[in-house]
Length: 85
Image (cartoon, rainbow, N blue to C red; front, side):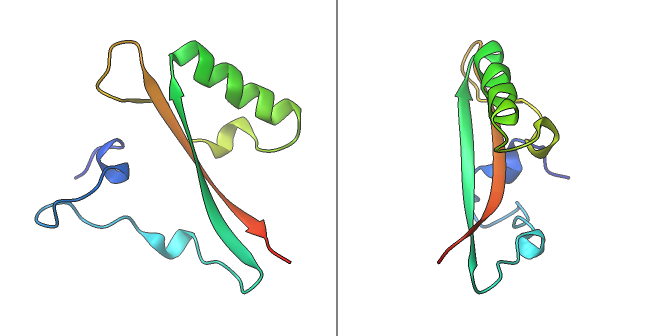
């Protein structure tokens, strides 16, 4: 089983299963965009809450805070479908 962090890292193609893209089926007029926040836990959490306040994304839409491998640094990921005209 892969960890939450591993599912977002590039695969060497040998033992890591691919990310399930079936959750992100774009319609003809919608295209996926991936947002990645990286910083201290406080800054990432604050930014996620700010984006909810301005109506862009709910707190629950973001991934859990994931370690980056750097001290006092985490990341969180959001995938949205953007309407293209």
